[in-house]
Amino acid sequence: MAVDTDPNVGVGVPLQAGLGLAFCAVMPLPYTLLSLPGYARIMGINPAHFAGGFGQNVFPAGSCNSIWFRYSWQSSDRVAQEDLAIAIQTAEQDIANYLGYYPAPTWIAQEEQLYPSTYRPELIGNGLTANGMTKAVKANTGKIFRTGARAITLLGNVGIAYTDLDGDGWNEHATVTIPTTLTDVCEIKVFVPGMGGLMEWEIRPPRCKYITGGNFVAEFDTWNLIDPTYLSYYPDMSGGPRAVDLTTQASNLLSVDIYREYVDDTIPSSRFYWEKATTAGPFLQPCVTCGGVGCDACNYITQDGCISVRDGALGFLSPLPATWVGATNKWSLTSWTGGREPDFVRLYYQAGKASQAYLQGRDCEPLEPYLAQAIAYLATSRLDRDVCGCSNISTFVKTLRTDMAFQPAGGDSYFSSKDVDQSPFGTRVGEVMAWRRLSKLEQRRIGKGGSI
Image 1: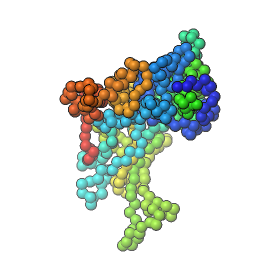
Image 2: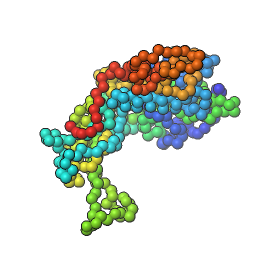
Image 3: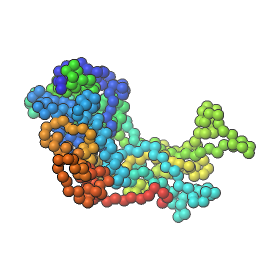
């Protein structure tokens, strides 16, 4: 492994060189509910080494070669951050499939559901059930957190103040500050500059963030602010990847973008669709180019609407045709544009379990530690390569990846208990550990059919 002593030599242009969109400069890692630094904390991994950096006098690379790289092609004999992010994302989806809800609030956009129709196909419904209630559709997930689409507003691009708090000669602390009139600190988030506020580029978690004296302030560890461009270097002439020397500070971001992330109530949270019925005389006249110029017959009739939550825990939502009235800042109910019930509807909402600390306003991290650990154990058990690091980490990872239903020749034997056989995730140690936690959570499941 080579040491990057000249951070100005590498691939691409540092992201802080311009504030325009820099999507092509470096590929983002998959977005996960459990942040990668959060995973490192659960597993006890050195945070600076996990971020791809080291220091000459602090966090030295050491003899156990524990530096993590961004992509597996940079060092194919070890797990990379991208591999881990994919494993975590897969684990989170598997947990959501089992529980019926995501382990933390997740943005859902354009989820398509058939609109409930009457049991008598010759009748045209009016959007109401037999008891006069508006019809509801079953969302793909339960625990509806709130309805509406994700919206972001750029508050500004600000510089980063790096400071040395302990006098060791290394600026290990970073602070960003921006004036604001907002009062909900959890809505304000920090992103890599020039990336348009995409969720994949959020810098998290901060050590802390708060609003004081009309300013939003967020504090970070320096290693979480390495410019991603410097983490994407090709292996050099020595045949190995390069670790980032954190003490030079030249490889750190110079600025960040600060956004407000919120639900914009003026944006439709549902959209209805009707298929057009096109006939000319006694015969159907098909389009030459369906949906093309001069042939509107194949396009859907659409109408905006809002959503009323019928049963948030089970995921039943009542989409309603409505128009936003700016004078009253409310959605006003209207009639069906298509003259009948729609064929299908697309939904926008946020759903998932939120921790009590988040709901009580004591923490901006909605993923509770109990579920975060289950995600970490499940993701680790499915890694297809060893984790390079010191013996304590390597041994723990090896244990989580051990398959208790397989006994290699001359290897250890395991007692297969009932919960091992019943685990829906698999029989590896980490999979069973996650299953033991999740099996104790209350499960409220319901079929997809019907309406309430």
